[in-house]
Image (cartoon, rainbow, N blue to C red; front, side, top):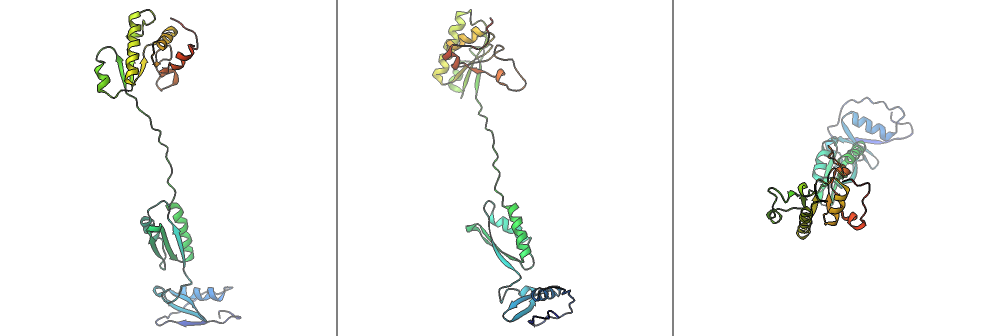
Length: 256
């Protein structure tokens, strides 16, 4: 019934019984035997000279089970135990898994289709972590309105400051007022000695910008440079004066 050209010996294990109906049209002897055994709820194992039909739970205990294959998977990025616990839920009734955490390996024995599916599953489980670039913004602490109000010299030693903002009252009449010029120069020198940048506020003319550079101020801001904006833009931020100090050139026209 199985083949006109091939003959095979099939030994029926103790307790194996039952009627089986299988379509054997155009199949090999091996396929036919395994189909019959599987349809009856058993396993066909290849042995020298023939096959043995046994209970599923006994498969592979006395001989290498031709129904299953063994494959080793490398776990590179994920926890081996966690991956093994997920894979275990996707094994067939024949399947088994062995963890080798020290070598970051899992050994899977199962039917070929199940092993192939586990291989695809592992691709999704063990993906290389994506590198997320986090832009780190360095915050600088400024002492505002230095020289007036509560901004005193004692803050320079008590607080971890990065910048000193020169109050606009010293800058508004800077070009005409000699006292303001001396105050600005003094504050700039204090800033340099303390390792802090100095920023002049309320810069409203080209001559004032040039004079601030000559007095040693590091940066400047004000309507002459750019008006306040809802979002930070170059023209609304303090600009450095060191390049102007070197070149003595101010782009654009000046107006008092």
